[in-house]
Amino acid sequence: GENVEQHPSTLSVQEGDSAVIKCTYSDSASNYFPWYKQELGKRPQLIIDIRSNVGEKKDQRIAVTLNKTAKHFSLHITETQPEDSAVYFCAAIDTGNQFYFGTGTSLTVIP
Amino acid sequence: DGGITQSPKYLFRKEGQNVTLSCEQNLNHDAMYWYRQDPGQGLRLIYYSQIVNDFQKGDIAEGYSVSREKKESFPLTVTSAQKNPTAFYLCASSQSRNQPQHFGDGTRLSIL
Image 1 (cartoon, rainbow over the protein chains, first blue to last red):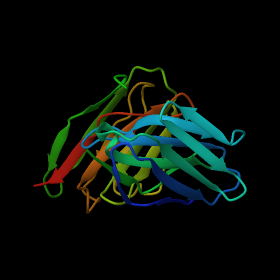
Image 2 (tube, helix red, strand yellow):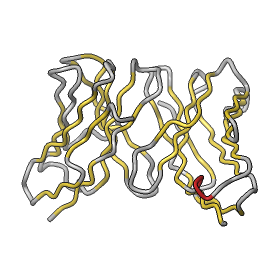
Image 3 (cartoon, rainbow over the protein chains, first blue to last red):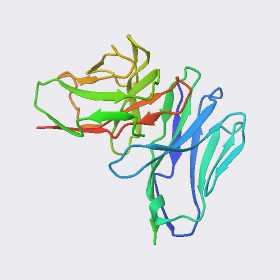
């Protein structure tokens, strides 16, 4: 099965700075990579996703990049705001269509 | 995602007791999932179902059971065989297996 590793586990940035979270995966046939944001005590919510036929996708302050050769993908948040503080999870879907989640990154945006 | 409802929000289990967590969706999704979330371990798949009356074990199915008698419902039973049940349980659904998953608000299970 797939193995997804996520780094860093915690990240603190000053408000207005950028934040980058990286994930690697093991199954070269994986073709779908979503990112979820989970605020404390709440449900994970999909914030952006990318499929393997695309190298980058942007949605306002959030972007995801995918490097299929290196088998890694990253979440980029620009102009961070305090409400961006949350735990972020990456995931990859393997050839059996099963989701594998990273262990999460706790992002703190310092006002 | 108001379309997925989990209940109860908090649940307490006594030793030797089975408890059932409810998950209902009105999104007309075919696939449903149960995850367990522990601090520092991300989301681990317990069971999933792609269609009514069919379900498969995930990575940590031991001590759990599920049923899928209706498309909109996928209850999870935590049996007494699950020796460490204290965790946050999340239910999710998706239109099909390779589509984005939408999560419920979760149930926090604790041992009395």
